[in-house]
Image 1: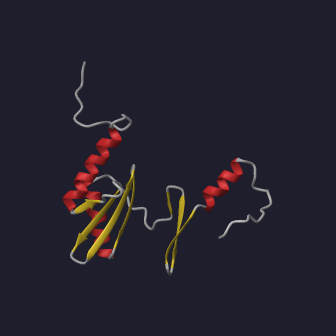
Image 2: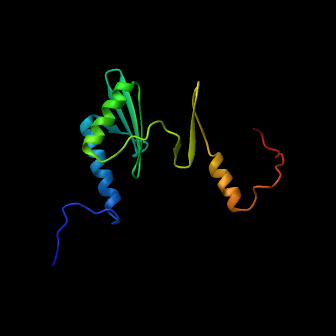
Image 3: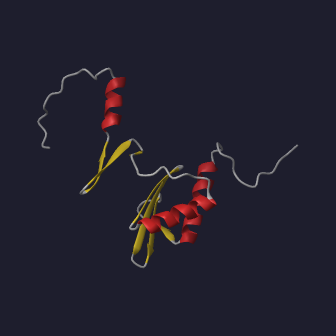
Length: 133
């Protein structure tokens, strides 16, 4: 028997392209535009409201100028796609994100510690290097 698929299946090599195309097309119907400098960044401008969405494979980081706009976008995305809101951003692509009064602080401390542990260098002593900070 031969089956004809109407959509690509997860795991096929063209599946990521099909997913990106489907997701970006839906975002554009909502009024988002794709950033020219980075195809994974989508920007929404409507009146005085702005939202930014970053798509990396199947991970999404979304921020907006108001809580109401943020919730509206999340609800709309959840109606179209099976997804869940994980709350405030803590980790993304190896970065740890910490909110600070002046903004967000991004660091790779855990990633660095993991590398040192794999290399067996967690008990090594540090030393100064002649580099400007």
